[in-house]
Length: 206
Image 1 (cartoon, rainbow, N blue to C red):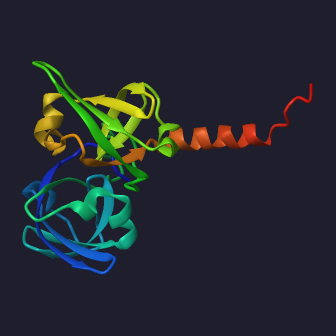
Image 2 (image 1 turned 90 degrees about the horizontal axis):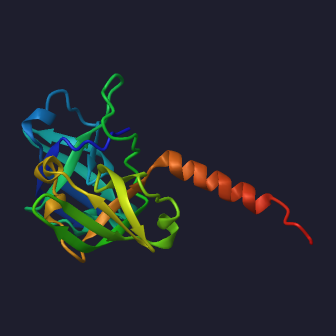
C-alpha cells in the first residue's frame, strides 16, 4: 500500500528494453535507501514495482508488457525523473489517501494554467475512468494524492501547491503528456456496487 505522499524523484539512469519487457535502473534519493532490499515495493509515477537488484544508490526493476502498455513508464527515457514512494509500513502516517499502486489508465494533459499564486493542471480521461471522479474526491496523479478541483465533461483539474511542485515531477508536465491515474479504491468499489445493484433492479412496467 502507498499513501500518495511522494518522497522524492529519482533519475532513470538506464533502460534495457526487450520484447514486451523492460528493466529500469534508477538512482534513489539517499533517504529512501536504508532498509531497502530486493523484493521490496517502490512506486514509480504511482505504479508499484518490485526491486530486483540494489547496487549502492542504484535500484533495478523489471516491467512487464502490460505495465509498459497501461502506464507512462514505457515512454520514460534515461535522464528523466520519476516520482518515487516506498511502500507504507504499519503505523505510518497516511497523509494522502490509501493507494494500491495499480494504475487504472493514463490521462492526457490538456492545459496548464499558471498564475502568481496558483498552478492548475487539466487532464482528459477516458469515460471508463470519468465515472469514478467527483469534485473534491481523491485521485492518484503520477502517484501523487490530489483532490479533484473541477470537472468539465471528461476533463478534470487539480490544483498544486509549491511544495508538491518542488517535491515531484508534476511541474514538468506539459499539454500532450500522459499521466498515470489511480482512482480512489473506495470510490471505485462504491460506484461499481451501486451500478451493479441498479442494473439488477427491475424497472417499473408502467
